[in-house]
Image (cartoon, rainbow over all chains, first blue to last red; front, side, top):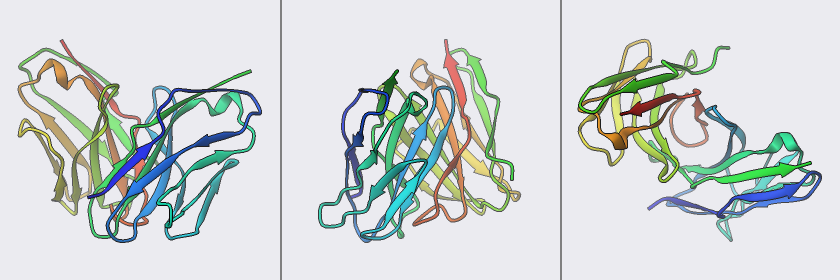
Length: 112
Length: 114
């Protein structure tokens, strides 16, 4: 079956530090992969996506590369800001199902 | 383009009551999904509707039901509320609800059952 595994949080970083949030997946077929971000009191917002192997999704300084050989989609940012404090969710969707599969979320706090 | 709108934002109900939550998707989106979010369980998939038909259902009891109207708006109903139903309920719309078509979420309805 399909599943997503995310690194456990919470993660606390100083401003301008490098961020990595690990995500690995199990899927049948060829899934599309997504990162979502949730700010307090809000729903999830799409951060970036990649739809095939070796694709790199990027947005607002965040990047993630679809690695089929390691079944991974790790989220990275070179220099985090206080405003990046939020919960980050990795997700997959395959082309045959009608359901998205989400990781458990990783809480990030960036301190000045 | 307006985003996904969920109403109401907050609800307080007592055990045994029923509740109806509403979701208006992004214009042109035919797929609407519902999720329950709690601190302990994370995001749990409830069901997905596409063109008024339920295409997929998560592992929730029959007290949780939904429907979709011809204009793609969706409602979710929970009957005989239990304390454990307290959660943030998120609605998401999508063009296709699968594959590379991403979900677009509303801000949720916070349900508190006392």
